[in-house]
Structure formats: structure tokens, C-alpha cells
Length: 108
Image 1 (cartoon, rainbow, N blue to C red):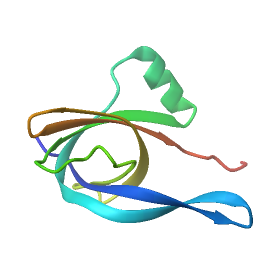
Image 2 (image 1 turned 90 degrees about the vertical axis):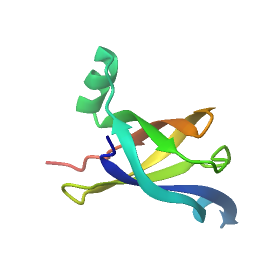
Image 3 (image 1 turned 90 degrees about the horizontal axis):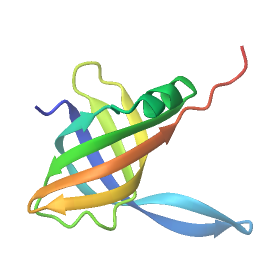
């Protein structure tokens, strides 16, 4: 069951005043996908601290190996989140992307 609209990107790095800055580069893929929440207790505990992890399942014949950013948009609510892609795995046309995101909380 597809529950998000996934946009998969590659990033380019450039120097800005001597510091490396990531820029979103090419869009590799945009299509519905399945986003699965973590099942391990320590991952759920980390989510309470603002550190999120998930797995994204995508059906694609394209090579997603160079991808490093994923943006998911919830089809029901329209909310979106940007993720860093940590790991890629594929089995034929199905790709499994391990994702991580961090939410920075500002003061009270």
C-alpha cells in the first residue's frame, strides 16, 4: 500500500566561504511509495528525542544508488519531511531505502 509521494534527489557539494554546502541537484524519481515506521524499541525511543528513522519501499527500474536525499509527502495530510538516505538495497525493480531525519526543537 502506497502511503506517500516520494521525491528522490542527488545532491552536489560546493564551497561557500570555505565551508561545504549541500545543494539539491537532480530529481531522480517522483512517484508514490510505501514509508514504513521503525519497529525496534530504541528507534521509537529516539523519535521522542527528535531523531527519526524509516524505510522507504519504491518500485523503480532506475538506478537509485547515487541518491542521498528523499522528500516524502503524506498523501492524506499533505505534510512533507526531508530525509537523508543512509543505505540502499534493491531486489529487481524494488528498492529499499533506509532513511534518517532530525527535528531541531527550539526553546519553549
